Image (cartoon, rainbow, N blue to C red):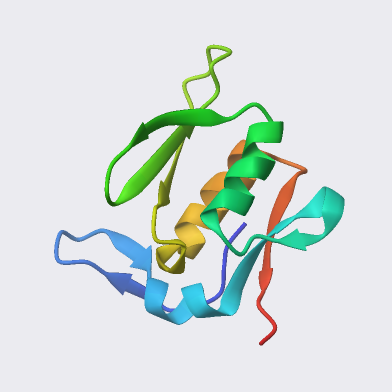
Length: 106
């Protein structure tokens, strides 16, 4: 599930996708309703319907987990404008069939 965009090497030698080139061009969509996620509360509602609950939060992030014993965590920025493609793909991978990442139409 590779995303388009520019890949860069960080100072620590890790290669990652440059968020500044992709975040503005991607959108997370809840597939059953074909609904673009435009806010953290909207995304949390959809994730809540799939069994995700808040696990941890601070001024920068919100973490969600499934209380049914799963070890997965989803970490989201509290400021939804900081949602990047890496966050979106994390949601998609952990909720197969319910979300997808699409090119954002302005």
